[in-house]
Length: 287
Image (cartoon, rainbow, N blue to C red):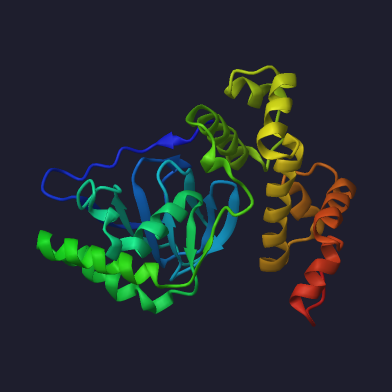
């Protein structure tokens, strides 16, 4: 599997695109595009993937994703089947080639530069809800443009954190970035199953031995360490958000051996899976 390239069509009358998505589950696969993307979640819960980072999302979640950074939203199974978001796509030059170079727009320029690894805005909740609704409903192109500039300014003065803060893949040359994106996409799609080293090496046209050397050079981790990081992060979500037995969580996270799962979990989190659940849930009895 490789990241899906998404072509964003804005037409000829508008310089950026605002769309509202209302689906039973968010359907976009792990994908990338040359546009910046602002996504505001109105309804739905699940897991958000940005680059190497896997985190929960919920209503009020707001992120800014830089160009060509792979991402997707995977919806949880729940009685509330609606997944609703407002998404804005725009290019850096959407207001003109040199417009963002103006000194008055320094904060916005800095915000966009930092989005190369993804930006998560801290507790936006209702703070931006009206802005996105009004932007999506506005028919006058000039007013939409002014509202967009005002929104970017508001975002640039809001506290945020970098999504994929552990990795520097976005600073790699394009050829390496594309190769790493393919590897990330494969892990996202397959970490819950057994992953074949020859299969993933074939995705990027390397022998298994060359792949292992390349991956460690680029990430400072072995491939299996990176896969296990995804598996442990997924297991943490299951331990803290469900009452599933540890053995079920182990197998559902991609570990075929519960003792190996417990060993890897303790190595990363410093606690056994049961103790981690107990500490998280307080007085609730562990499963």
